[in-house]
Image (cartoon, rainbow, N blue to C red; front, side):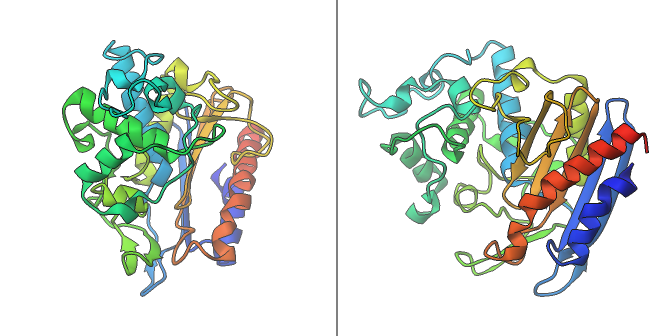
Amino acid sequence: MIEAAFAPVAVAVEAGAVPGAALGIITAGGRTETRVAGWAQIEPVREPLTAAHWFDLASLTKPIFTATAILTLAKERRIDLDRPLTDAIPDLRQYDITTAPERRLSFRDCLAHRTHLPAVEPVYTYGDDPARLKAFILQRDWRAGPPVYSDINYLLLGIAVERLTGAPLEAWPLDEGLSWGPPPGPAVATECCPWRGRVLKGEVHDENAAALGGRAGHAGLFGTLAGVLGVAQALLLHCPPAMRETVHATRTCGWDRAHPGWPGGDACSPATIGHTGFTGTGLWIDFDRGVAWTLLTNCVHPTRHSAAAASIFALRPAVGEAVVAAFDAGS
């Protein structure tokens, strides 16, 4: 199965569209196949990619960590998903209690990106004191707009997890193969960051997560190929219903559901969820077939501002369709 599924990845690596890539496929029964090719780093020196390398998972942090934590707290009856965030963060927009729209947002709204909040905000440009930046996020009068995929939703959810547990995010237990940075092993390089003035390797790529101390609800998690596949199999076996049920547009509590033109490809079943990360990562779970796959790349290395970096948008669905075709063929 892996040989046919890896074909588009091999072409992309050979053409220099991505420096390196790791593909893993796992079934509900635990059958696992993996393949790795290319470079963990090409600048300033080349380093071959191995299956032991840790990837900056970027926005895969949202479903793998934050949504899982919030749904666990809901299962423990510590929160109600349809109650407002103020149950966990009473000081949210505390200077505008009667009219601030943020005070009416529910946990479910944020999990499914069903809010008025903007996609992103350069919070890191306001400083690098995590406590002060969190206060800024909570008290900001956010510009309103139509519902979009928003990092701000998960920044708020990350703060909610900390408030509800009374501990920083890194205190939450993680499965083997997952870690907050710096990871406990060889790391894949991401971007030569203009803000930090260096190639990032083993430190979080997302600027806002970095300014918040490297750990945030929207980004900051690192993982190995085996670690992400472990998440995939756990979901194949025991996925919380809220992660599969559509809440808004094509979104569930934490994930995107299969729809035409999405990154998982058009061949997967309607009962498929998935998510991507800006650094070039992605994970998809097809429940009807009982198979999941993860494609981990460093497409933003050495810069996000290149035609090569944009190639990930074509590569992801091509890989998804190749995985499904190989699985259906029984190869």
